[in-house]
Amino acid sequence: MSDMIKSTDVRETIIYVRDLVKRFGHFVANDHLSFDVYKGEIFGFLGANGAGKTTAIRILCGLSTPTSGQINVAGYDAYLETEKIKQNIGYMSQKFSLYEDLTVEENFTFYGGVYGLSRKQIKEKTTLLLTRLDLLDERKTVLKALPLGWKQKLAFCVAIMHDPKIVFLDEPTGGVDPITRRQFWDLIYEASHNGITVFVTTHYMDEAEYCERVTIMVDGRIDALDTPANLKLKYNAGSMNEVFLRLARTAKATGE
Amino acid sequence: MNLPVVVNDVHKAYGQVKALSGLSFEVKPGELFGFIGPDGAGKTTLLRILTTLLVPDAGSAFVDGLDVVKDYKAIRKIVGYMPGRFSLYQDLTVEENLNFFAGIFKTTVKENYHLIEDIYKQIEPFKNRPAGKLSGGMKQKLALSCALIHKPKVLFLDEPTTGVDAVSRTEFWDMLKRLQQQDIAILVSTPYMDEASLCDRVALIQQGKLMDIDTPGAITNKLPGRMFAITSPSMYTMLLELQQYTKAVSAYPFGDSVHLHVIDASFKISDLENYLKEKGQKGFTIKAIQAGIEDCFMYLMEKHHAHV
Image 1 (cartoon, each protein chain N blue to C red):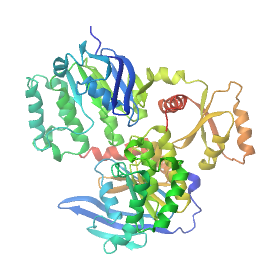
Image 2 (image 1 turned 180 degrees about the horizontal axis):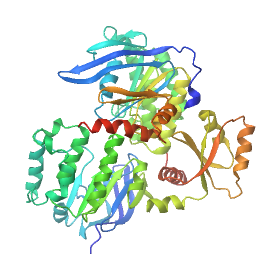
Image 3 (image 1 turned 135 degrees about the horizontal axis):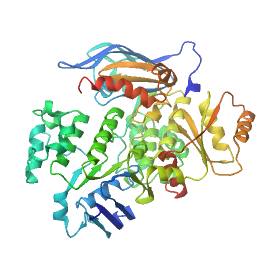
Image 4 (image 1 turned 90 degrees about the horizontal axis):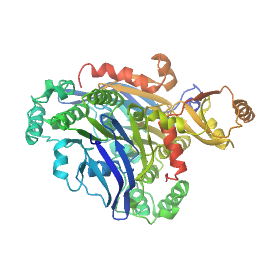
């Protein structure tokens, strides 16, 4: 949303990417990507299936090494300091969620432990976040007994319980009902307001409008990067859906 | 003529979890029928019952006049089914998969090629590629071709567009529209509310219960009161103010605006303008709009207290 954009003075860069290239054999999955993400920003990362989003996210999370290019995430180098990167980010996707057979509280304890929080910190954070979600009464409930919408909100809270600098959300709202989807975005705004940078992918184009800036990847390249308002203006489109269709269609013409 | 699908008060539970709680509806001949709801609504359970892969706990269901419990063998011959998860043979090529499915249904690709031509020709250049090596969009086209190759009377598609990008989604719906011309009744499930408008009729379901069933136009017309789209240079504070507004039934973000639902007949736009000015909002716009399916879905969810 446009009001989230702070004034034009210099903003702190939290993700720095210059000429990122990732090849798998002859296939170029990321073809000279360059962009900055600013601290506290909600940054939308869009693109058709197979455009190279997942490859780029894996590199930014320190899970895969780039072929070439300069990449710095949360102050750490994506070639040499991948462990540091992992400690300073949170990650959540529709597929990778919490442990279904553990209780809500056990999931928090487990992930808090993974991120090196002390017992005391884990306890405090768990209470704080569950209070925020109004789920304190469910802390002894096994996860699989909860509705999907609750699980997704819990997964988000677990992803930010160690106060990461950046949280990566890979299609966090897929399949979730429309009211819960909007409640989820309330959580995203709050995290952003508290200074956590949010890097999010989605197939819901209305959600693209909620991002401060949006990139659209096409065939391994970044074809557009701007605020939703500017993109709509530039492509003379009424909605982000139109912008997306216009950009992504050119790619489809060349085969998938 | 038999109705393609008849469902009478169907119930299904998995242990304590009620997947379907008394669902009843019909699909008419040649209809493109949408089953709209989020994960956990019961979409997959329903499709599995109709394709005879699950037996309902109570109630009855018929496909082309055949009982899903007693006549399951006959039903399997006349339905096409595209499950939510890609279920073709990954190690067989595109062409081998298609021949295999034609083979089990004792037909040939040639015999019904006209049905799939439109779709299959887009993946034909890759016919020697293993299915597992196809992109998402191509897999989807192959799965649809395989589900159609025996010329089914009824086609069941379980979330064919989930996780698929906006371009492929649009293409997929264009294909369904063309298939409909071939006299095949289609029941398609989707969590994407915006796809409802592409169906002849839709059922909105949430937690195993039907909230409404009608044409998309009739559903949106039924919504009581009026809907307004409000934009502001400060969307976040605008949303908070609108949620506090006493005449608002609901205020939800919708892309670049907030949708405000008002039922109170005495409501005037000027009241709202004054309220927002009082709250310090500047440069906003208020526009009366036609409600969409997603607006209606959320209204019905709140009315049924069906959200969690």
